[in-house]
Image 1 (cartoon, rainbow, N blue to C red):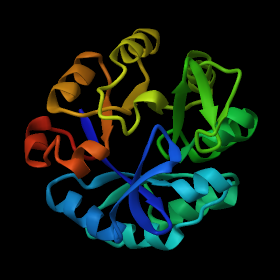
Image 2 (tube, rainbow, N blue to C red):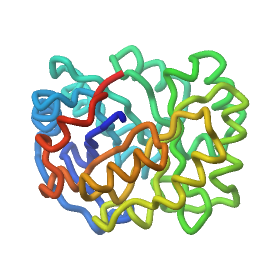
Image 3 (tube, rainbow, N blue to C red):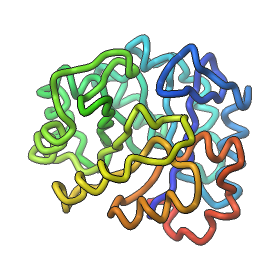
Image 4 (tube, helix red, strand yellow):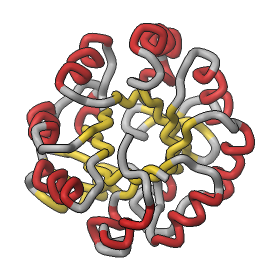
Length: 242
């Protein structure tokens, strides 16, 4: 199962939010690149990097921090947060981002994202499935939508999407465990999709449960920063890069 340490950037620093709330922020390091280097040195070079300022504003805000992360030897990045136009997709890919993550735009302008999937390919674009009380969320998790995660995933699978990051916002940053019931449901519904779990991962036992649920990977954030999961404990988890 793929393990992706998370680096969330706000004001150029490595932070974590609770339930996506910008007034519930903890700063863990002022240098995201040094955090990236520590993950890579421990054997986890594929990182999940989100520009929180960009997600809220609707345009990338922390390009310098992202560029510094990409300069760390051996690091591979999937990056997102505030990507709203094709020029930014192309710019991030040219900078060395392995795949870009799209969330709000896919909810609001699905036809646009479908066109990008056809042009760029499903291996270079991942879609964020952010769920709050059974509905999709957008705009840095500050807005809801009328769509459901199942309908969203199905519509984009038909257009070539492969990877979906599935986050229960109520669990994110709360250290209360993942929404396993939801993950079981998604795997039964979408046997062939590449599904990544995100939100609530707190212990190694959570990772075992996520793997049993059939998820292809997991994003780990606060649990790594606060030590409830150690990088050493993850060494037995096999696949760490793609």
